[in-house]
Length: 150
Image 1 (cartoon, helix red, strand yellow):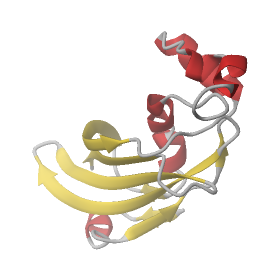
Image 2 (cartoon, rainbow, N blue to C red):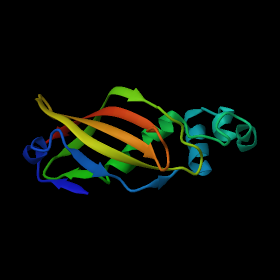
Image 3 (cartoon, rainbow, N blue to C red):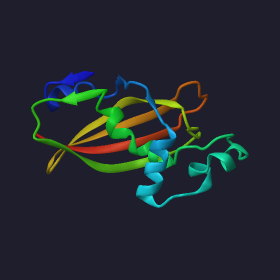
């Protein structure tokens, strides 16, 4: 965990890789819970028997499930002290280059792209890459934006 003592210290880290999260295993219970929450019950996610005959040989996590792991993964990588709050502002670019088969271990690598003053505080841009243990390509690459209010 990289800890920053405020926004000024964070600004000095722009352009650096902040680190990696711990590994997280994506299991069928998590996939099923995400399907129930979103209504995305496509067989490739929730039908292990049919998915075994499909293109990936097993069920796979929804792309948006992989994306939704960002809070649990990125908050293991860095922390900004001395601020009132940090809110999600969105994403500029999002890609899912490879699937996450059930039972996969994933982790997030975080790069700090920019820290820009705005009316509410500072906009922080991060490039987050979720990789799968043993995977050749990332499972998710996203340019995330957050607003830090000091």
